[in-house]
Amino acid sequence: MNVVDLARKHNGYRESCANLIASENVTSPAVEEAYGLGKDLGHRYAEGENEVAGHPVSRHYQGQRYIKQVEAATADLLHEVFGTDFVEPRAISGCNANQAAFRGLTDLSHKSMMMAVALPSGGHISHDYAGLAGQMIGLQTANFAYDEEAMNIDVEGSKEIIRATKPGFVVFGASLFPFPHPIEELAPVAREVGAFVVYDAAHVLGLVAGGQFQQPLDHVDFVTASTHKTFPGPQGGVILGRVKGDERLERAARGIQRAVFPKSVSNHHLRRFPALGVTALEMLEFGEGYASMVVNNAKAAAETLHDEGLNVLGEDLGFTESHQVVVDVRELGGGTEVAERLEEARIILNKNLLPYDELGEEADPSGIRIGFQEVTRLGFDVADTRYLCRLLVRALRGEPSAVKEEVTEFVKDRDVRYGFSSLEEAEAHLPAPD
Ligand SMILES: Cc1ncc(COP(=O)(O)O)c(C=O)c1O
Image (cartoon, rainbow, N blue to C red; front, side, top):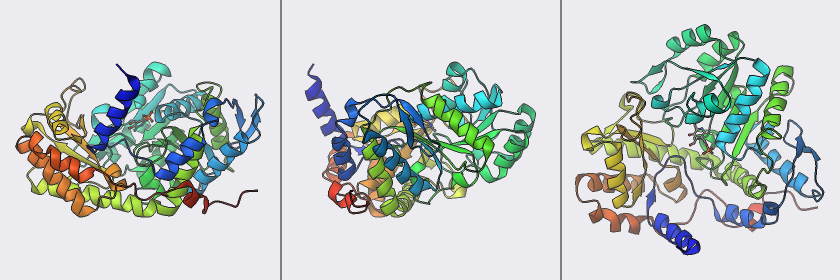
């Protein structure tokens, strides 16, 4: 086996596919170049302490003359996008961001109970007793009440559970996330019982940046996220907040920082920082247009699939407000069979538990989840999206291999949009070098 050849084959394969996994994306030429520019940073260490704003205050090794400034400049670009004063960009993934937030807040609250969306309703394994929260941090997890029809947290039922369980913190946000969560209604109830309020924006950070989804930072204490899903940057994590002037939140932010370094990260993968900064710049420039096109495409896809006879969930609510479309495919053989059939047509998406599935049915759940953030980045408009959805239905109803060529022809050789085409173009938007 030749690892280099295999990596080349992988590239060719996924470039020939319509990539509809809701947690993935592609980076722009400028972000690719910035990642290349970070080559030496990718050889280095920079352990030390940060200010709450994300600016390094101490670094324990020599050689940091510019590293500190790269980190501070990246933090400042993120502040500009999100209007924050706390940023922790050293989390190396969304899970690591959750780990640090959950650890930091647990150390402060001294409570062993947290609350999140249940796994079948779309919660992430890192929020669950079976995953990071329970098995790595030792937390008990209570779940929000969930309204299967509305595909959302049930407000009245959840108020009761929050008051009864008095968690140290609650976590909004999920992996199956078509509709905004009721943070305005429930954050005050969480605060009544002394809980911190976290929002996991791993999936929707790019939509938040583009102002096209709910704005969690207006209502919650901390946002955790990945930087590579709807936010189309290098793979990594981030934690954000507005904490200045609130002594309790500042203390929490410092605890969260310590839960990144020194508690869980030694090398924060510095190579990604210039690429992360350039992605933030792209969001400032193109984020609104990008995010609104993503949501338009997802809505158009849902309508098309529904009109073609598929059981798209959320009909009464307009199917989706995010990048995701959720389909019950039991009548077509179930999530596993459908996802595998579609791969034969070079349409890549994932099977997914639906809110009425039982835990334990992960191997063959009732649904599929489809994300439109990546094809939008590749320039898909509503007509393109509808066409792809019709190909998808043809692949399911007929012989998948019969539509494979059409799919590949349709997706190939597309430029990345809503980003800078070169680092030179990006740099024109940055302050002149000293
Ligand atoms: C809601 C949610 N949180 C956290 C994560 C983990 O993010 P990462 O893969 O960056 O660790 C995911 C992954 O898809 C997710 O859906």
